[in-house]
Image 1 (spheres, rainbow over the protein chains, first blue to last red):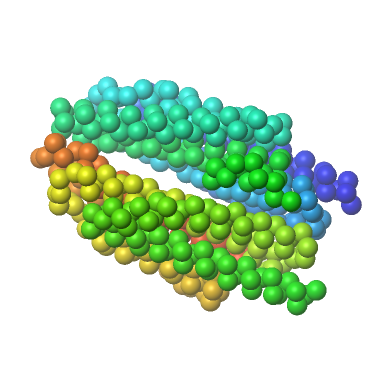
Image 2 (image 1 turned 30 degrees about the vertical axis):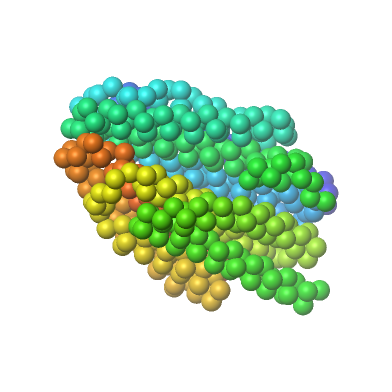
Length: 223
Length: 223
């Protein structure tokens, strides 16, 4: 029985990582589509979302089956609940890359103007956070997960300064308001992707350490 | 044993509804703060978020305990997993009301200008969706939950038209760009609150009917 459960848990781990890889590549493509005004790449992101949605539904179903059949406790139970939640976050990151791809299509239809902030830095950082949050899950590395939580503040800061730059440029070029606000939306989507990566990292910490890392409550042993 | 489980499940139901009521009132206060430039109300929302965060952590812990001690299956298992997920959505709605309250503080510090779209309609609709998604959980009413999913399209539409109105007005009054974009942020936060209410409603449908209602997959019996 315990052997079976172990195998099932390994399976769940593989599948959440596979979903993570798919979602990561969706984010990459969406960022590329914005930067290169590439509507084909954007289209691939939009069409690919269905598979991500289905993978989420299937994985949740598998988690429920393992819970019902093997009735895990302690760390195994926590792991499965973490997978359930991470699954949810990954699906939403997928949705946000669709939102970015839609902005890419809109931006490609408008005359090109310079992005008034460094989109690359935010994109790089958000992607790194997604990657690292999943790495922390595979390697059960709480320090690595904590690093992701710290990076979230940087992305928030970048988004705030994007807001300031955009409003400044709108003052000077009000005719480009739609385009500028669309770029600002992309910055916000990246910030939300970073938020989801932070949620994943917090779930990993919580699972590993039985620590309530969420909401900045600090290291509080729960039992 | 079964009696115990029943009691625990009733307890979880009561607690998720109590959290729902707290979060609902936080959203109400945040909307009020934006509309009435009331920084005291905004401050209450911001300060109140800590209690919401703690309630989420506690409720998740209780769900894990019930899973470990009673090893529920079938509908009971689905109910607890639904509570775990709804708990997460409620906490994030709480965060979004804090975001709105922060925008309220910013807006109160700027000269008043007319909101170029009907903020009340979006606010009313989003609040109704949160209320109704929780009502559908209490009354186990899938039709009511489906109604919430339908309303989401309306809120998306309202947000899109807010975007158009805001960019139009920015063209005419670029000096008010910051204020106008802040109003647009409020519209977006309401749209995200509506999204979370939709997630809750989908979880309720999924639980009641064992149907994959998410991602528009239609009524598909899973076993």
